[in-house]
Length: 454
Image (cartoon, rainbow, N blue to C red; front, top):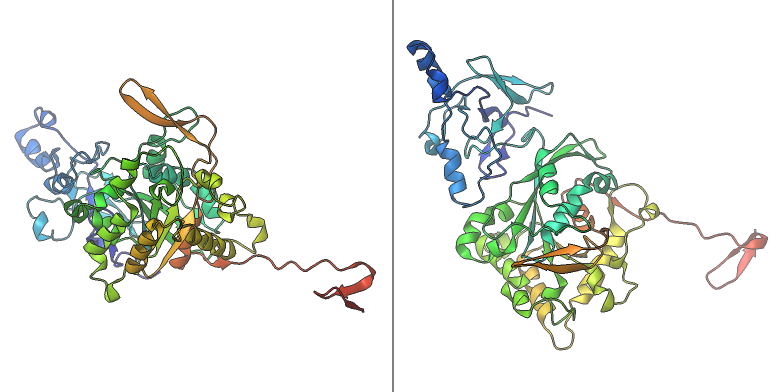
């Protein structure tokens, strides 16, 4: 594995680089002013270094994202232990020193402060955001999920994460350990019959990274980090400056598009015309181009992008009902676990066909032209995170969507498998070759109906 404490990693919040050996910690020891009142002057002076106080570095980061600052981090005001010299921008505060200790693999994961208290609260040395469990120990792969309001992005992500263990098992992968951030996201974005559907993250709100440690069939462990990015934050230049890094630093992008955004291509009711035109799908791609793609070699980004039509069940009335993307993959037909290549090829071809110019509408072509101009590696998908119709309910001044049947996902795993395959984390698998049944009488029949006796 090499020296895992000297492998450079990027913070999942600020994306600045550091080595695990230079990580900072929050103390478990903390005092408030009233705690010092009954102490001697000498003792109180010694404890002042552990007083609860606002962290200016942490606050400075979240000032860029009004209304997004996590209020569930009970350690945000605890002192910081850092055994190396702080970067210039962090010299505005003082740091404590401690004694590091490591796990059985030699990964520094704990510190002991001068009070003798142990802490495993690791934070980024640059922005002081709390790092996910064992972050930096394994190779990190970032996956940005992008989509405008009502695209189905957040419902999709909630449904995927809710059944992520079963999904990844089909690719020969295992989720390792527990992940509080993912559990919290699922709990706050529950998808259930008779309950309001998640509304997604509001524009200008930064959702916390969603990390998972996973192990593949080659016994390699990775940290996957998912981001829920509102597409509206990508089309305004000043917003893209803040949210663009979460896409620019991604190892893979899943762009979720409601088929009703292509209202000239798919004639599906129940969608306001003005809402579909608020942020056209290609606008998000154009914003990516302006922010970071244009500077890429050859003018194209090499980040693999999976473009997925959500709510595929809505297409049943306007496409051939025998389309492969309308039904789940039969994994029993495949040899092993991994990326199901043949079903992907059919899916990719079918969705491309759907967006070809039709009835003089150029909506699909405009989108595909933008996609081809910006990304060298892309693929098309369709899925349903619910597979049942959502209805709109009104209660006074509040409107919300809900489902009146139990949800059942269809092919939500495809975009993730494709990205994991592109990142060489899972292998390609093919369908088993089934020998044709032998004819009666011991004859082997040719394709023309004739044969020879053995």
